[in-house]
Image (tube, rainbow, N blue to C red; front, side, top):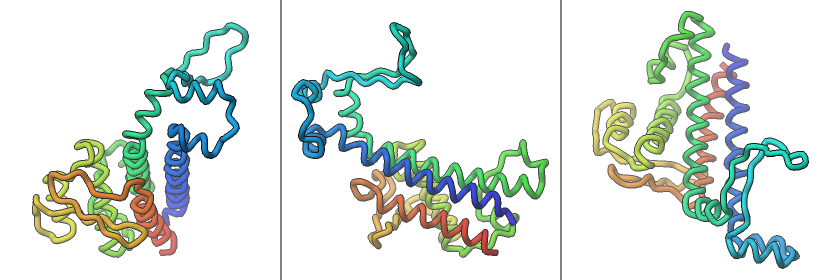
Length: 230
């Protein structure tokens, strides 16, 4: 049951991995020393432009023909460089989590609508009860991890990545069946480390976040494959 929904959801997990990898690796292009190391034979005038920060960045739908004006997003490379080095890695992680969990919410919605098309216009909120209503067999620890990812996503979307009492209360209710607004976040990683964050702190994680994202992807893939195999 839900086989088509599962395949779509698995494809989206792979897409997020590619998104994260592509944008994370692109940060090196904004580090002039790193860029020169991998491209040592750049013409001197290009090197000088990069060093000065005056090279422009234009993103267009297509190349102009002749003197045609094509609307574009424009920025100074120095601005983009500062953004990528100061904020880029955090934003890439935030957007990757948002994409992962949003696709999971879409999967749950699609499953409900497959059973009952009348739910197409209904507001569907994912909760532990959702798995029971859909007869989705998932280990309680997997459900807890999925809802943990939801609260992490919410903190990034609404609280600049700070673990807050609202998310702590919701997560503690899921894990311990008792609401505790001081409940700390225990964030696993693919390498085995667990990063602990207290309420009021910025969510603790390694610098490039890849190990955290891989753990999250493994949670979703394990859940989807479990659904497919039942």
